[in-house]
Length: 221
Image (tube, rainbow, N blue to C red; front, top):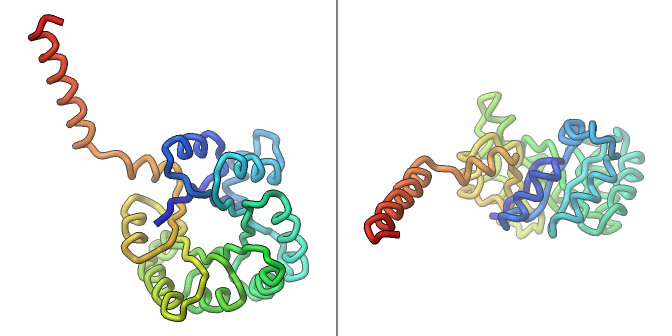
């Protein structure tokens, strides 16, 4: 399973790229709004991100009619070869997905909360579907079950659409998404860091260093 970073923060992306674990980035208007104080446009920020990572960068449309979504998707897709357009899974969205996918524009369908939504947009041509794990868990539905069922259905019928586990709230969500067969999990930087941390690792490093210092003292360093 590949790891995408769910952020619009360039420093977080640079760190994940240095670690060698950032296969792509997903953004949305909320994430961009957190960074908008920097004074750059959404286009400028997405292009800057695309220059940092070698994989897909999802940038979201905000238009609410099919015609407007198509025009916006065309514009966003032109920003950089790595850009994938995010479009929500509703009636205007599925029409736009069908139209722009036929033009070769890659679409990541966002706000997926049911297998039926994923099936429909996959048939419409979406390259990616993003089931929202955490938001389903918030209302006492199992978001991981949605990921698993979506992967199984798309695999059964040999559909090329890939599943991005989104709305990841913690490391356990990442583990569960991988076990459920997700092709990608998109995670906040905080969660990425938590995935790496473990108190026994820290304790082990401290013990090794202490033993090393004692050994060096014993040989008269």
